[in-house]
Amino acid sequence: MESKSIKQIFIGVGIALLFSFIFLLIYAAILSFTNISEGTISTVVITITGISILVGSIICSRKISKNGIINGGLVGFIYILIIYFISSLLNGNFSINLQSIIMIAVAIVCGIIGGIIGVNRK
Image: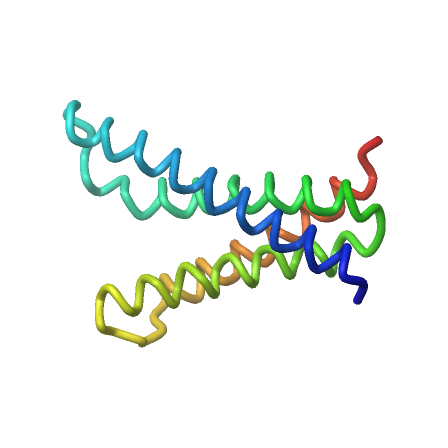
């Protein structure tokens, strides 16, 4: 793998993390100041994660212009690895449950889709 590709993958991960942070802050404010049920948290977090990875992998793959599936999948995988590690450190629990598996699958699939879109977008 070229150093340009590695750099772009980490830029894509950074963009995805930034998008997630911003949108999760907005969602937290909405939860705090409205009557929206807390039962929506899981669905919204998965949606925000997927969209953030999609955006990050589109930007990454558009710059690299090849191997969109691999590069996008790597953006999703590295993103979810970072989030899992931080989450596990904060919770003190390094277990994998059904929600973790769903998040991993969503991350990789959204990364792959974003990679395909990014490579084919002119």
